[in-house]
Image (cartoon, rainbow, N blue to C red; front, side, top):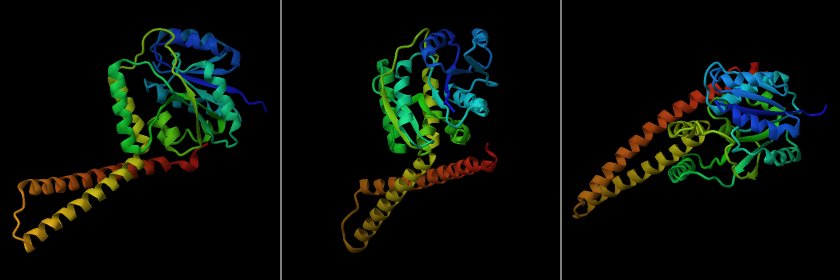
Length: 300
């Protein structure tokens, strides 16, 4: 069978931008699925129902752009064939349709049906405050997970992934992060960020912070492992320092400096704090693993 091209995009009170995107996608002959993240509150969405090449999926309430994408793909999954090509991108123009052929070509060069191709951001034009915050976000993300996510919703994969892997609960937390956290074969295509087609972004700083936190959630196992290493190192250093103080007290007449005592006390406090955090993270990780495997045999 000839594979079909599906394009999924979230729209949140941004129909003018989507209509421009649709025009630029017309040459690809794709079936476009809009995830109406306004949950029916945007009256402009009604006009999209009249378009022959557009399907509108309406979540029951606002989910956020990434979770809305997952909702739309899962909803349309019964109509998707394993050999079809799925592309997800934002509707505002920052994911450029001109880069679409490069992602699809890279996907077709991959032999695995599990292959994922994602657009890696090579440049972005943002206000200074955002750039500073983004720098520290990347630094903290790297320290906690060991990776830096420089991708968004712009991705391509085969229908098999949509039908079999997007049922994983990690996608309920963060779409783009789950594609990386699940250790799938991922290839990256460098893509510059485009300019917004119309209007202004609805993503404020509070939503950006929430988005960043949700991106950490699929990496819970890596965060737990790094917490374990940190706790073990801190505990070993604390034990070594305490043993050294005891030796000095027992076998020498040297006085222990006050700063050394306070430092040792601080290290003990840090050790117990790290242990408490580790127990908490491990509990979350265990629950997450249990949820991830629940109902696995019943998936389509």
